[in-house]
Image 1 (spheres, one colour):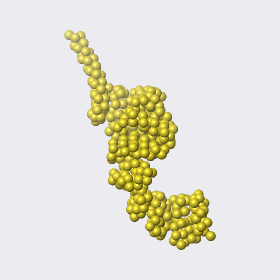
Image 2 (cartoon, rainbow, N blue to C red):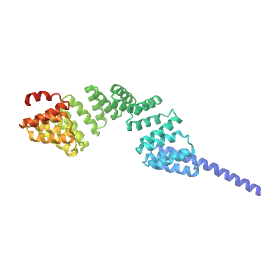
Image 3 (cartoon, helix red, strand yellow):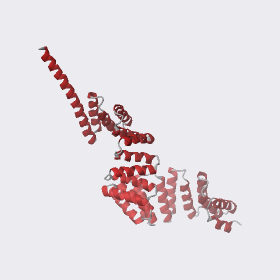
Image 4 (tube, helix red, strand yellow):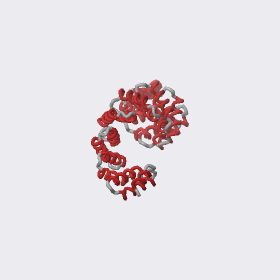
Length: 373
């Protein structure tokens, strides 16, 4: 009787152990399903249940870290990844995910160290190369980012994002033709991404392919009419074509979407200046200056518009302000010199023209000969 009772107890303990291990696995698999379905709170709950049943379940720590990272709990995610790595110091995926959490916190240098560890353990992890490319890009290591995105592409040729990212890097390296080729490949894999068409348009604009760039901007805006930058980019192309009214329309649409961008007010002012709408141009320069009063260019442009209205005193005030902000601009001294001469102050005007010449404004020499006896 005692023997049978002992055997029954042993069977019960064995059954309980096996059932607990199985239950931990079931919770883990459920967590993965919830994670893939973007139900992050439920995923976190399932992984936690798995860990209560099996505290050394490294994959569950890694899974819970992913769920926490996706909800913005990056520090909690880091804690989970570190717990996984305490269990297994060769867990490459945990190093990669740890690096991603640090990347989300802005610790690019720390992220790169962990990506390096992940890649040493798993040299075929395309995601680790891709994410390390982001970190290097953030640190302005463009060559390093280009290498990492290229490696990610070699490991995963069907990922449109890697072509797009390498295109962005190559464009910043002024390798515009290579960038366009990358955008072409990204579009071939995913033709529904407005940002890629916009970026390709920028690269084409940079090599003078204005009409082709316009087509890309048109496509991008048709796909996403809520991105202010796309209207601004198309406006620049329209300015290049001297289609000033259409450029003004695009700048206005950009400002409808994002009304606090001083550069767009300034550029719209330039378009209005080109159409000889001086009062409207000055109004836009006023708005740009109200938002960013420390930008010398805005004062220079407003001075030009005031000069066109023969408001030389107003122009001189703006040029003085511009030089206070940026005292080594040859063109501003040149314009101020001419403005002073128009106001009858040849002596000070000639001092400015000579300063402009010394700073590199070759055109000042002609005016010095004419006005400075």
